[in-house]
Image (tube, rainbow, N blue to C red; front, side, top):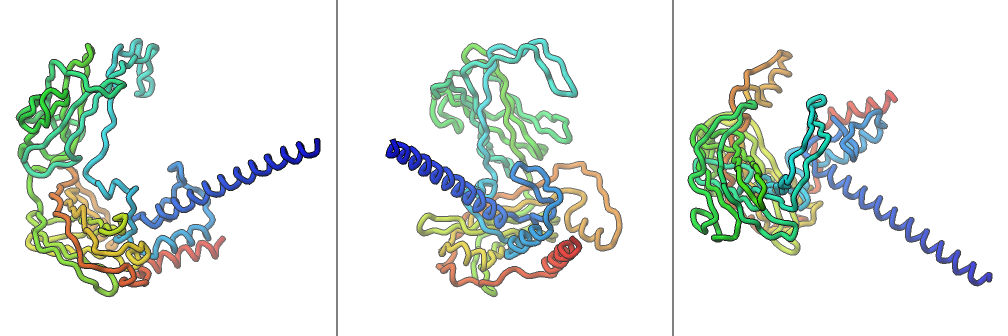
Length: 402
């Protein structure tokens, strides 16, 4: 009897140890993820701190705020660590569009409560879903732009589409403006369609000079005996504001990696430029991001991306590096960040009437491979600036006043 009791107690103890280890590992993993996200962020995490559920943190311990800022501010806001999970940066102009269910029976007896529809009989969905995918989330220029459409059942088998009627339009300030229809569409294996008869339709849109901003392709059709409407969107910049040029170079300056990218600015204004850095050996891990922004006059210019030395050193990723997702966009707002900073410095108000789309995009530059480097070649120096020192002094005073 005692032997059985000992076995039971031993089993319980083992289960308790396993449970504690599981929760400790889970908590440790959460802490590592939280620190990784903190270090990767371009934004000061103590300005508008939020919790894991996106809820603003109130009445934080000033000491914890100071500690978090000091940890974050070892790197400059313009160059941060990068990891594969940051798909908004590693693949910035593409996003996975989820499929949309095909309604078999529409909702009935619907009313609107505070702008939210309430239906006594909700919609009944069929086992068919449709997915509409633009080739990218932006288009630049007036070249052909491709969108695909397919519908499939729960086994993943593509279904034939009938009565396909597309329309293209742009939307500015919640108002739709019609555009030219697709120059071609179908499932014939021609005009950009990859395979005839596979029930995946291809639509080719050719933006016009007026197609600047949020663009939509909307299609009415019938699938599996049900009428269906589906649309997708992308952002179009049909004109040229700036272009990257050949002749990218890399060097080490003051312990940091500098990648110099030639650009010709056609339309002066406030630009934001970004680039990513990835290793080419081993698991080809991502290492860092770099950003440059400011007012640029028209003409030939050079964008010097600074990948902070300590970021590269701490990453442990050796070169050669691939500099990728080299991209840029012009801020078309009547009130740009530089104008806001100047107005704040001069203690005056600033305003503007927004009548055009906010952004104008550039085509990405081709990938560039740097010379060979070791992560240990770069500086151990933490970022230091007047901005950082002022912020730390302010947070220290918050601690003292507690």
